[in-house]
Length: 380
Image 1 (spheres, rainbow, N blue to C red):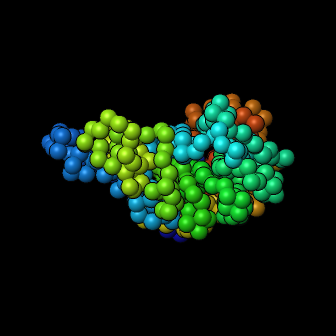
Image 2 (tube, rainbow, N blue to C red):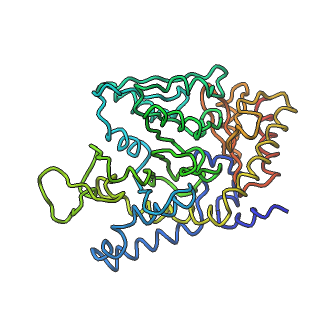
Image 3 (cartoon, one colour):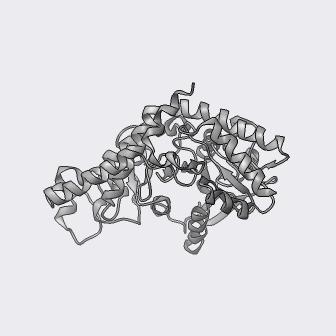
């Protein structure tokens, strides 16, 4: 018996789809609809009073739920609209015209991050990206060698989105700190599926979102800042919520809030924060360690089934190096993906990688078999 399957009734879409796409969009919890109804009721009944009755603090109170999942202490995670904004807030903390102006990342980082890093070159930053020799992993030694005394920020993905390769964040962070650099880890592709412990890693920042493994839907990104840095950094990307006394409406330069609110900016998306909480609660109920144990078993099953059919696997075969996704490189992968979607088997395709398949804690073994069989049928 699989004890995590008890959560299946929490996700209505599982009644009519094989949901193998949690790496892209997690299934919606039933209780998320109830939370959105609660928001509507509060907006309708409490009107402006809802801000002082909880809405204003939600970027931090909802962030505290994320903190429990990623190993952070309360008050160090604030909600953001998405990772693009969260990363931009971090980047805006630094003077890229200074002698220490190097950004180190990997070519396989998610595109939104790379666009932002390249954009900093117009402000004086120098970007160094590490390539993948096999299209799957990033050599650890290459990352460590690239981090030198000119490095200001190391920006890496914990799990690479194209291959599901897990990077050694703790070792990279130690090297960065040895030379006086800081680290921002993008944990979007891991949090909720692979154990994350930002304090044990020692990272300075972490960014992520709720759309994927956390089953929280869009519009609920988040930013973690190491506690001892919170009062020392001054983001240039800012807004009235970051002010020490926002309702004084001072018109001079901003006087930053003394806590993590200083990393906020404009008015938050309150409906998205209501919707996202349900997914976080279920992840905490299920337990990330148990989710990871099942993920390793089911991704290994998918690999075995694929290899038995002669399908090339574009993910690490070692489960210790593999996140929650298996990428299968098949002929006409994009067309095959469309055919599977037509059969209510939800997967996706990425150029240069293949068909991405992501079982989650609510996935049955039978669905793993069905997915591979459907891919084989689509190849014929």
